[in-house]
Structures are given as structure tokens and as C-alpha cells.
Length: 591
Image (cartoon, rainbow, N blue to C red; front, side, top):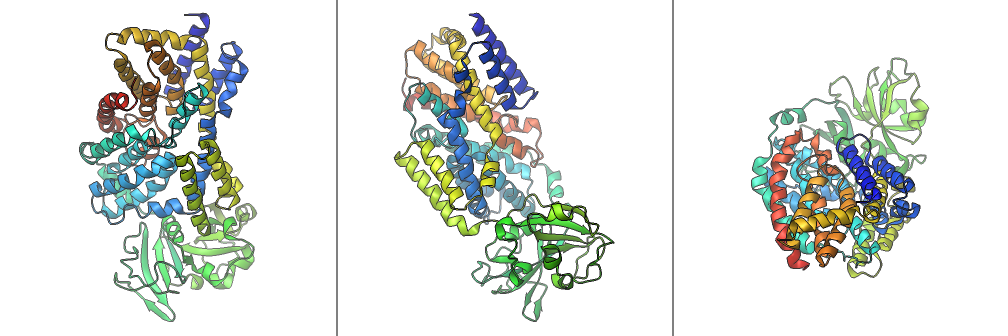
């Protein structure tokens, strides 16, 4: 091999070790490696930074905004909280997750899907006394499987497709990968319902942790006309199994109904009094037409919904409002805030919110304007003024618009009327222009580390090709498998991709192995498509470790998993999918 080939091998090996041992963030590792190779003359400056204009990388960026628009308008939340429905067993819950999560992840980025379903699954586990360790690995694996069913299912698919176009190959259609991805996903789904479900750990201690005491508030909500709860019984409205919340009583005019039975009917303009944790109150606010009493009584003209934030603050002994009721204190006039709920030393305050007389040490949950924290963080009237990070005002009035934009995007990509990048860019612009998501939220929704990693890794791919390293290693592979032909090389490529994706990022594996796929196909004098499809599937098949795929890391802590739990469940799944992929791929994409 030439000096350039040896240098490239050392740089790539160093990058691999840095990623495997977590010495530096992936984006920094790949940018550094690319810059070093460009400085050494292995690649040109244009080749080093060509990835920043690659259509696959830019498509991923646009899709981050599209998915954020669906999240900000409540579309994803609405879907998420209707998925588990009336499932009573963990098997039924996995089945429901698979039926919904896999199709969703075929069209949406996996990360926000897992982020959306994580609290939903944990809430279901809390209600049914099931350990989250029985459901969270299946949640992650199902999103990974669903992502193999369409071109936009994962960023890996888009990156490989962008490289194909860049190297003069035909672009894949939206559903081309589904020919292998759908049977691949079905087999994985059946495995998780049967063998995999029995291999999942049962962390009994997590059930107790779900019931740990948290700061409980008293909150009062009003049922506005048109709310879906109006006319329903308490049980049919789903208010008997609210996670972290308990319906104490119903205020109806001058009448107080309590304790509240499951068959009690809810009417329009009823005031529902709950006690519960902050996360539960946040979930209540997501129900259209169910509003905190402060909203119903008077709307703040100074703080429109898009600028509101949820803030917790503790009343200090020097607060001038101590001794006054919340109604008398007139928080909206004095502080530009509306008290949503009250916590007092773990005791239930048996009064309406407006009639609670403030005491030192009371914790108030308030909806405020955007500058409340900055203005009152050091005010002697309050201790510990902080925002509630998980809360955001939902733009429900834009939900239909965001759904229509997404439906049009799918139609454009399915029919091929516009290039995929242009269709996704138009959808992202439409989400911002129609008010489904603000410009600031759109910027924040983009995972810049992922994009920089993808873009910088293209430089390494160019170095593997220019230096001759890809040719040298591919020649060795071909010589080794010559007796069995390209099918053996395909099997080795898939296996190599599966191993590497457990240690470094899936997108990096796709870019690094892409030149080897092309060179192996050239040496065998066969079409490269079978090798590229194997690369797409293997790079996404990260089931054996929690570090190989972001969704695995997301469920690792909440599920109380140990490192070997993923190997125990994921290794058989990887082997099964490998055995299926090797005969399936060349049958669909012949050599």
C-alpha cells in the first residue's frame, strides 16, 4: 500500500478508537480526521467539506424541522397517548407499540418518536404495575426496525442514497428499501413478541421507584365547551388512571361533588380539582379544551400562548403577599403571572385555588411571561425561581395544518414529483411559515452534532477511495471469499457493518464502508446495489449494545438496564436478521 493508504488507515483507526472509547464527541473526531487528511494532501479541500452540501445530509436537517412541527402542534402527542389504549398485558402493549411505532418511524426520525413514547410507556407501566424494563428495549428496537422500511426512515438511508447519487448511481425511490425492510421488520416484531419478550429483564425495583413520592400540587382545571371530556363519565374520560394525578372533586356551580365516582358524568364548565405531580399537570394541559382556571377566568393580553412558560417558585418569609389569598394577591397584575397549582409541605390544601391563603414555604406553579425568571430570580419575595423544562405551549390551532403539510410531503416523495431534498425543504419552510413552529424552535430542533458528523465523515470516505486503501482491503476480501463468490462477501459485509455500528455511529459506518462496497462490486464485476442495501440494513441494526444507536441510549437509564441486557436480547435478533438478509437481498437486487 502507498504512504497515503497507510496514513489514511492510521487516521481512520485513530478515529475508530476515539469513538469506541468515547474520548471525544463524534463530530469533533470526524472533523479532526478530515482536516488532518486534507492537510496531508490525501484529499482536496473541496472533498474534505463536500459533505456539508450533500443532499442526504441536508434532507436530514430539513426533516428535523418537519418532525418538530408535528411535535409542537401536538400531533405526535395525540398519537402517542392513544397508542397503548386499553392494553392490559405487556404482550398487548408491545403489540400495540409495534403496530403504531414501526409505521411512524418509517417516515419520521426515530429520536423524537422514542422521546414522545418514553413517558407514555412509563405511565402505562406505573398504572399496570409492570416494570419499564419489559417495554423500553422493544420500544427502541421497534423504531430501529421501522426505520429500515423507507428511504427517509433513518438518516443512514439518506446518507447512503446521497453517496449513491454522488457516485453516479440511481437514487432509490421512497419505498425501494421496503422490499427488504418490511419482511425484515416483521420478523423482528415477531421475535420481540415471543422469544425476545422472555429474554427481557424484569427489574422489580423499578416498579417501586415509579411510585416514589414527588412534590404534589393542587390544581384546578375547567372543562371548556367543545372539550372531549364533556359528556363523558370520569372512567370513560380516562381520569381514573391518570399517571401521578388524582381527581379530588368536581365543582359545578355552587355544588361540590366528592369523592368522585367512576360513573360521575363531566359537564361543560365543570371545574375539576386534581392533586398530583408537575408532569401530570403538564399532561392535563395537553387535553384540548381543558384549561387551568386562571385561563378561563381571564386571559392575559400581555402574554399570548406562544410566549408563556411554566415556572415554579417558593414563597419566602419576606413576600408581601403572605396572608392574602391567591385571588386577593392578584398575581397577574403584580407579577404578570397566573397561579396554576399550589404545593404545601406534602399536605393537601382543601380549598379552591383562588381561596388558598399564602404561607411562607408554599411552592407555586405559575404560567408567566417570557421574562419572569430574569425579572424575579433575585427578588426577595421568592426562593428557587425556575422554569419547568418539560412544558411548552402546544399550538393546537395549527395541528391540522402541520398534518396536511406532512401528508403533502409524503405524496411528493411517493410520486417523485420533486427531488426528495426539495420536497423536505419546502415542507420545513411551510412548517415555519404557517406558524406550526417558530424560527427559534426550528433552529433548536436541528441536531447539529448529527449533521456535522455526517458531513465530516464524507471526507473520510473520499480519503479511503483516493488513497487506494478501499481497493487494497476490498481486494483482500474478494481473494478471501473468491471460492464462495459475492454472496460470501455480502455476508461478511453485513456482519462487519453490524459489529462496527455497535461501536461507532451508524452514519459513520455507512460512510466508511461505502467505498468498500463499490470496490468489492467492481472487483467481482457485479452490481453494487446488493452490497449497499446490506450496508443500509446492517448499519441500522444496532441491537447488541446501548451505545450503538441513540434510541438505545435514551431507554438505557429509564429502563434500569445493564449493558449485558442489550446483548442478551439483541444478539439473537441480530443473528436472525443476518440469516434472513443474506438470501433475501440478492433475491430482490440480483448481482
